[in-house]
Amino acid sequence: MKPLADIDSQIVCLLKEGSFVSGQEISTALKLSRSAVWKRINGLRKGGYAIEARPNKGYKLSTSEKPYTTVAVSSALKTETFARVLHFHESVESTNTLARKLAQDDAEEGTAVIAQAQTNGRGRRGRAWHSPKGVNLYTSIILRPDISPVHAPTLTLLAAVALAEAIEEFIAPIRVNVKWPNDILINGRKVAGILTEMSSEPDKIDHIIIGIGVNLNIEAKALPEELAEIATSLREASGRAVDMTLFACSLYSSLEKWYALSLSSGFAPVLAKWRTYFDKVGQNVKVSEGGKGVATEGICTGIDDDGALLIKTTDNVIERVVSGDVI
Ligand code: BTN
Image 1 (cartoon, rainbow, N blue to C red):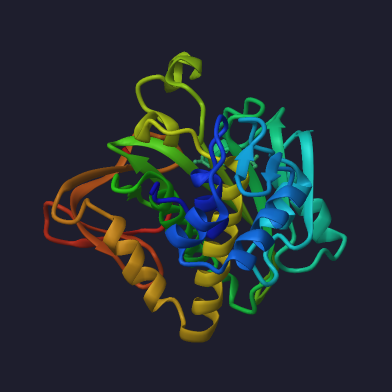
Image 2: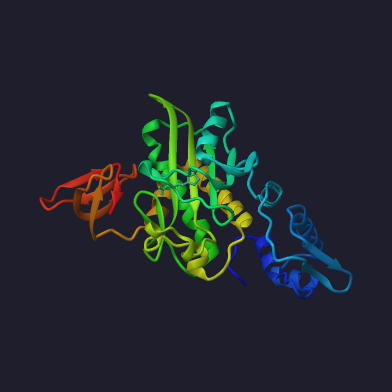
């Protein structure tokens, strides 16, 4: 069984294109009743999967095409609120820009935007985010946490934890690492990034947009030259194509779970989990601020409870770095 996210994705995995798989086989493999299998199959059909059913034979996929549409995502969602309001577009300038407009128009917490392509995808520090059509996930989600703006950076770490967890479900047993503050790497190559943008008053957050880009199925040969050596995709790393709809749903579930946990139990569990993905403790690191060359260098001792990077410099002073890039 491929280590995919949930029962629907496991059913999609079991279904074949050429031959029928019996309902009994699916129900035994997934420990589900026959009627539960039937309900799931109907849910998948509503989501756009072309599944043929024949008495005494079972089910088969009529086409290898995996739907990636509003209906497909909405019907495969397992969340309570996240992405239940979903704006799904073929192409937008930037999902973060659209999400910000929606938030300014009072969109509720959990509202999400997906685009199949972005014409001006934005990365951190004014960089561009390569956003070709139909191969990768570009999504933004609106949060309205009742926390002080000074604690907003911890939400970026939360998004990194949720994202790392969702990615690992699809590429297991391959593991990911986080590069402080929030790049997700597979074998040292970047596979996903997070752009967090906040609108707040001095002591109150109005909204936070968590923008996430994940290289799902892009092939190495399609990467632009400047990314060829430093980026990868889930498909390149695992050798398996990723169902974009199921990945998006898995990511929203993971985000919702970690967000709810942070509201009920504080950020300690998020930080603890983030630390498990971080492999630079005890190593020499260099940090640039604003892309202006090395600003701080020393031995990394971890991150503090606000998510700042801690670096022990040559004169044995621990410096707290709150923004920058580990280079
Ligand atoms: C980075 O690592 O520099 C952050 C990249 C964030 C990219 C995503 S794609 C969806 C959302 N919309 C954007 O314009 N950017 C973020």
